[in-house]
Amino acid sequence: MYEFPLLIFNISGGEILFLLLVVLIVFGPSKIPSMARQLGKIIFEMKKATNDITREFRDEYDGVKNEFESTKQQIREETDAVKREIDQTKEETRKKIDEGKQAFKYPEELEYERKEKEQKEAESNVANQEEDADNEDKPDESGEQGNK
Image 1 (cartoon, rainbow, N blue to C red):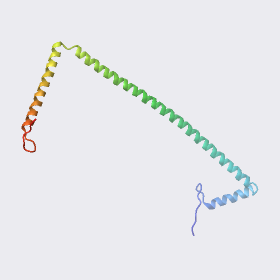
Image 2 (image 1 turned 120 degrees about the vertical axis):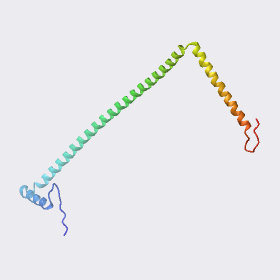
Image 3 (image 1 turned 30 degrees about the vertical axis):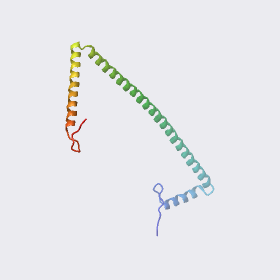
Image 4 (image 1 turned 90 degrees about the vertical axis):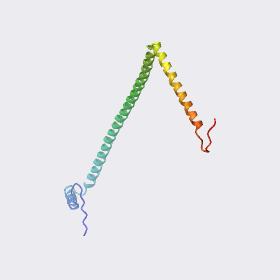
């Protein structure tokens, strides 16, 4: 035979029946329905109070969370603004330093830099001309020499 033990607060089914019998004997059959109604009201009020407390905690949590997110966003905006300002100042400083370097160069240095640049360009042009000449002398795929 299969026994299904009813365990509520670690009380088996037989123990619950015994407690119900004691309640019936002590309070009588006329008071049990009113006691059950009172017990139902008490349980309902406890559920209602629990739900109210849960809702209050949730509302407070949402309020704190929203405030935190707002503060976080403000901090992010401020730090981004500071970063942009630092980058802008850094760029302006670099430009001023470069301008200062140019202002303090002697005319001889400027002339030397100009001549050096011209020499590099001339060397580049010569290299390009030699490369073009080499390409003209090489035979193409058909075996004929290229003509320009």
